Image 1 (cartoon, rainbow, N blue to C red):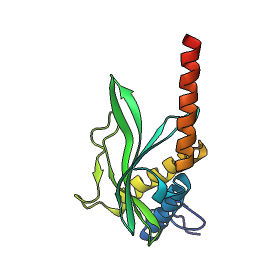
Image 2 (image 1 turned 45 degrees about the vertical axis):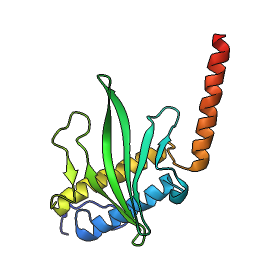
Image 3 (image 1 turned 90 degrees about the horizontal axis):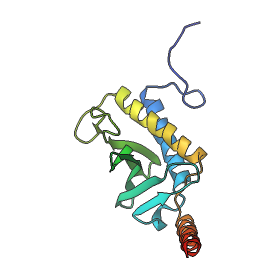
Length: 172
């Protein structure tokens, strides 16, 4: 029996080769569609608030018939300034039903972590690594209950307004 140090991504697909990368792109698309139920009805800037979890920020940078480019991040307070981390820009290809990271910012304290697919040629290994991170992070967000939908945003705004009214009435 031959030993292979290749990992299994999803039912029988070897990791770190082109077919596995394409499957990873497909899995990322599926998770993004679970996170964003109705992409067309969503505002250009949205926040998913879940009790006990960091707010997740979504910005839609570009919408077209076949692609959507979005920015997904948390905001951390670092010495009074908000710092975006993980700070990823994702392109969703609706016709192929795949999604990939096209750029990633430096993040918290990692000035060497910049990734920009349009200005550099990356190896299969590098593309695998950043998109595997996206897959794990999206799974983490979904497990914690994050979701973006117009109805959820309206409910969140109503609950926030109710909390503000309660706080004002308690102060009076």
